[in-house]
Length: 487
Image (cartoon, rainbow, N blue to C red; front, side):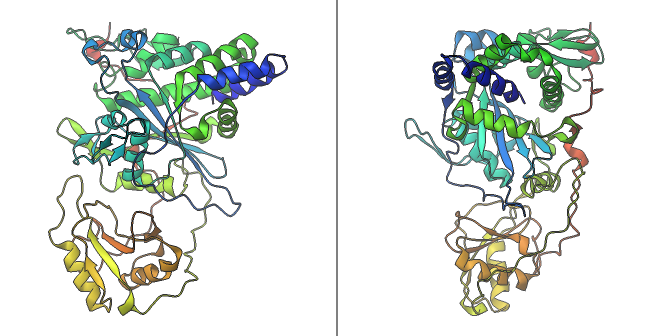
């Protein structure tokens, strides 16, 4: 929503003779990087009946200590110049009709597989990691485009843009905005006896924070609730909701000097993909974002379960949250949606015995290993149904919550749907994908045994309770303080 202010700033400056030169100055401030450094791209969403498509933007907070200012703000001198970590990751989803906005935070301690990424600057290739890599390490593997690739691999959500900001960027933009109100239920001082903590010190109640204090709030872990990254994400959600309300209500931002400062600081603070690489493109994004009211904005955290001291996506709940975003279903439950009709392909299917398909074992989950020999067993079952050309693909290492059939081109859609119908699968399980060279059946965690997958229950379009949803209109939200960090 901060881009609404930049719109006014550019318009004001454009009336002066130096307007064009200043616009070029702002344009030169912006740093850009490639959007996706991986080999996989999630499929683009299907337009709605009005021809509109949703917009997905990954917001990344970098902990880079790559300058004296960032070093001073971030501390941890031993990490100066080291690979940056994506310690804040939020996927912002703007609905196709621009009526609502959803945000999913992923805890930085999430363990997952980071895909192969290629650094666009030096061509260095970072191989795919094992399943127990922390998600925040993705940023140091070629740049923000690797973090985008990691999200797309995990969620199968197509990401249109990213915006990255570092410590000094948060401080400068928070200063330019002029302060955001936040609340704590006790006095708090985020500092341990060993000197750890953000240093945040606030009195009980609501305080208007800006500058370095805003950065401290966003980084605080020691002192909020149970002292975990999960509590920190909740505090970040409260700050962002309050920020949106402030920018919509704060008439002080009509000051030309305040607007110019905000435009200057914002363009210096951000790293974006080429699709957002100019002030006018950012203005266009701002125009889209400001269409959504706080009442239709929902902040969530990816459902998780603990794995030692780290977390992994919670089976079922995490995929449900990702599916709601993929299907453009509002997380506030206020959508009035009619059940989508399944569309049969115009391309007729070949005879079953002539349909060639690969079968992959995707039964591995965050808590269970893959079922040994599952691809071969399912291929045999398909052969028994008449699909004589079904063959196991044991070279692939994949994970899928639900069984899916992928096909590479429209001329194979009818064949893929025929396979789905034979197995009793919904047509929604058939997906077009450039990741496969032919029809590919990925046996998911919902089909660990038996000749056919379990019949899916009636689809639940509610946001899981484990996502800890917070409405943007909730002005009474207040962070709980650990009694050990009060004063």
